[in-house]
Image (tube, rainbow, N blue to C red; front, side, top):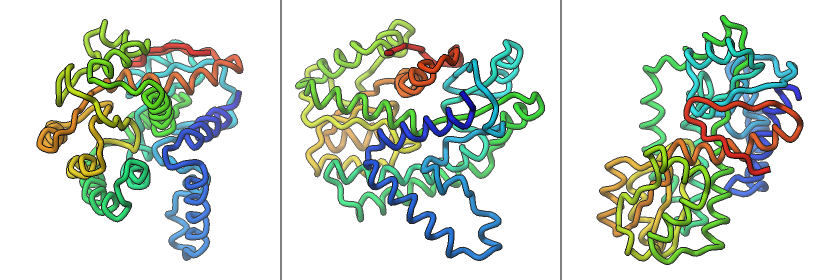
Length: 312
């Protein structure tokens, strides 16, 4: 399997599982192509052409042409220079990081716009979500300015080690996976929410390792009400949205992680917060992608936080 085929496969899975729906994602790409054609030659020089076919700027081939044949890949949640050296020494064709590096990391704010449209499905009007998310997106964008985002990419280049990252397609996959599960099971109490999570192998293993699901707001006897899964869209959204969730009738939010500010806002608006776990939730999304890669005979090894569980 060629590197570009893995890359394209992951993007297609991301679109299939996108909470906005495939139609809306494809419309977004079409609009982007129209906007590109209107640019001047100077503006086109700086335009990221990869975004014309890939709606997830945080997913990229970071080192490689895409034409290389891949027979083995080592996969981690976070990959930096140390992991790249290890993967190189172990002889893997490709190193795959879930969390973005290089230009993919800089594109994180753009990916967060996914949340604006996804929130419509939870009863929050687009005019409200867009304005609330604008401030949060700007905060994240500014926070990236001083960071040395190309450090790991430069290491891969010097070592001539194929390197890629895939973030939102994996997060879309775990979002879809858990949403389907919770819509089917409809847990009544937070205890049932926790039990439902612990029935999933990645979360069960995470609990054994000391970082299982936790209730941040509410308790085991709290009624869950309407449950929303919040696993995709780059990173945490605007804390002010907690009030809008409450206004929309949401009782419980299950996410990868929440800041203290988000916890405070949730408590003030009587929203239950359940932290499923960061590495474990990321692992589910990445595992759903890796299962498809293994089907065509690519050898997969895990490290750096990935809890590898095969489902097919």
